[in-house]
Each structure stands twice: as structure tokens, then as C-alpha cells.
Image (tube, rainbow, N blue to C red):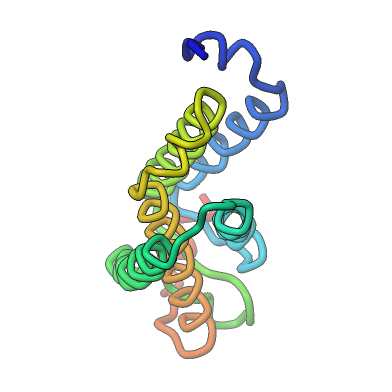
Length: 177
């Protein structure tokens, strides 16, 4: 089967492009400092974590090496996600129980678009030749890494809400303007 990328794009369901537009919107909103409810912050990470598990589950040729690669990458990603949120200086809003001050960053847009591109490429490879797509071990590493990034970010955000650090009034005032 000799399918070009343009044929695959032309045959892509419309809802995939709607999801891409939504993800770009979420990523662009993340470039500005804001105060965010923890539930809203969890939406995109939980979707990507779910997609990672579905991809693993739906792989009929899943091997122990691929699972080990996913787990190792997940561990690395969790540490990096934690450190990333710590470096960004994410802070809880002290007088509320579930809001966070999040400085603007381009990292979420980068992570989202990279993961979307990997999933789209994997789908393209799967369309051309499923056996080749299943044999690419870096896919499992990428899924594990990004899932871990999101998990580490979530863990750090929950820790901030429970124990701090807390945003100053000046930080919060700058967001409201």
C-alpha cells in the first residue's frame, strides 16, 4: 500500500482537526499568567493520559520490553514534570482550596503539539502498515514520557494546593488586570 501523507490528511475525520484547534487554543491560553481551578488544569493531561493507556491496551503485539520502556519513560517524565512546575513557580491561591497561580509558558503548547504530532504520525504509520507501526519502540517511550510529564505536573499542582507555596497578593493582582 503506497499512501501519501496528503491522502491520509484528506481522509482524516473532521473531529481530529477540531481537537487540534481546541488543543492549540488551550496551549495559547497557557502562554499568559492566570489563576486556574485545578479541575480545569487537569482536563488536557487526563485526556492525554487516557489516550496513552488506550494506545497501550489496543496494541496486540505489546511486549514486556515495550512496557518496560513505557514505565521507564513515565518515571523520567514524572520527575521532569514535577521539576518543570517547580521551576515555573506554580503557586496555590491561599484563601481558596483549589485554585493555582500559573505563570505563562509556551511549554504546554509545545508538549501538546508534539504529542498530537506523534499520535498523528503513529496513526499514519498504522494506516500504511500496522506491522511497521507496532515495531517502533520510540512510540512507547514518547507515550510514557509525555504521560509522565502530565502526571508529574498534576502531582506538583496537588501538592501546592495542599502545602504551598502560595501566591502573593501582587502576583494575583497582576493577573486580574
